[in-house]
Image 1 (cartoon, rainbow, N blue to C red):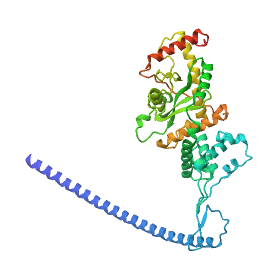
Image 2 (image 1 turned 135 degrees about the horizontal axis):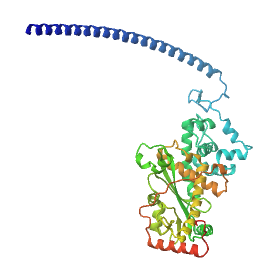
Image 3 (image 1 turned 60 degrees about the horizontal axis):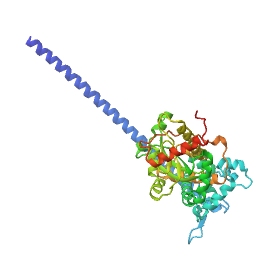
Length: 445
């Protein structure tokens, strides 16, 4: 048995040696094959590089000869963006750019261009557009240089306004106006910045005493609620997911309703009865509820510290807290008839703010989609949209009904909704007067 086992072991060892020999032989063959293949590839690419190098030399030589011939024979009327003399040589220096068609803008810029078509493209009349160009002329105008002619102020403003009005991507803006994509992007930011610096202090400001009196009377005629000087509302603007603080900008409520991941930033505004914004707070992340946005606003600081709204009300929504100067509807369950009547009148005041935001988003379609603007530049662009909205509202620019957008923003009730005992008593008194003096309707029944 021992002899038999010994023979079996020797047979196994011999078989193992044969297998090892075959494996080594196959490995050497494959290695030689791979080496030969790699050598062939190296030779092939070396030949290709030599051929390309020769072709490149020949192309450069041909281009040089053609350029020399063109320089000698070209007339001064050739299409160039600018020319200047090279000092000491007497030669003309020329800058060549890609040929782009400006036919669409040149057609719009004609004095006989139809008013309706102009308003459809730019969401405003020619007279309002001219006013904006005149106001921004000093801030956005550029001088011609030796290499190129400056883009006119009207075209600069038109690029920005058309981009805000349509929300079209920059590549389409580039085709419409015959300018480079990067140039259009730069123009939009420059004009928006000029609008914020030059026009915002003039067209977006808190009303003076005389204006506040008129606003109070108008709101009281609308709702029967006295001493209301503004309707406050907070809306969300969709954005692309930012690279930093993504969770802060995640809009859970819009995501759940639309079944699509949403990120946003907020715009809080106080609106007068004519739909004009009198106060703005722009740029806080979309995850922040309305009451927190209010606490971060400059209006909150001015009202709490300086008595800006002493004895006056700003009408807020259910997402805002009840303060000495913020009047909000009742939010508890099982409301009385008096409280129902008050909420109905408050909804009429809130409808003013919602309508203003509906026209804002309808007039400037860039607010309806995620824009290409970087997050740090977005408050400037949104501020410019609000200022242009005010100009159009003040000048009575009518908007087509089909452009109107229905504003939908989910309300989150604040954790501490009742923050003023005096305000609670004042609200109860107003509610009582509305119902028992015949100022409240009964549609809630």
